[in-house]
Image 1 (cartoon, rainbow, N blue to C red):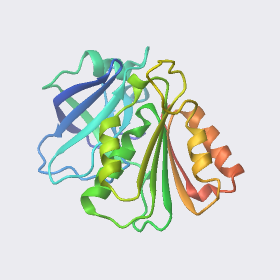
Image 2 (cartoon, rainbow, N blue to C red):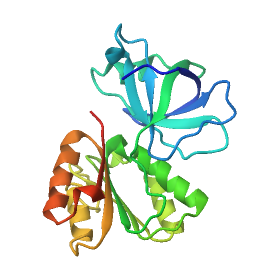
Image 3 (cartoon, helix red, strand yellow):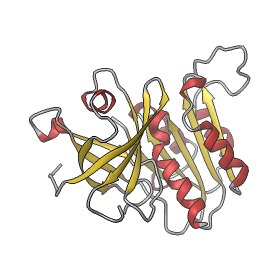
Image 4 (tube, rainbow, N blue to C red):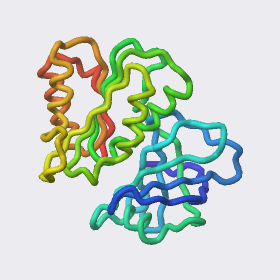
Length: 242
């Protein structure tokens, strides 16, 4: 990736979402507002290597566009991941980080004519949080919107309360999560993998656009499953976290 003019942001708040996921608030310096579209990402130039390919790491923006210069990130600490370990162990409130962007075409259409289905695992929920909050804020017209989230244990469900509250308040929004390894006796919810949720909901093959975000394995599997259900590749949008 060609280096653009670097922006600088100050980390103004850090919160722990789980043992290995943190929520960061960053304020872009020397601007009144930071313009981006829901679903886009920024790319950080971090002091973790000598060459650009070693230093550059991209993260989806977790918040909707606002009139100010603050945006949010959600980062998982990957064992051996130099960038995530840098954010977890070196970045503090008050730290300055350099980035380029926003970039990305993982965007909702200007006019939403079909049902929308968001499918994600782990921190793949990040761009969908941005999109959903923007839809609420702007009161954009839409049909049914689904968010299907898969992870291993209850403790790994990100933004559960926020999504359940949104489901109560936001017309035509359906949120479900499914757990693959939870064996607690007090858990009575869905067990399995995220694929079973969209396959069940869209077994009638009605028109829909699918947005997939997370690790490559899940996305590749979902793409093939959706194609087997009869959906066109033009209705399958992907954001891969390698």
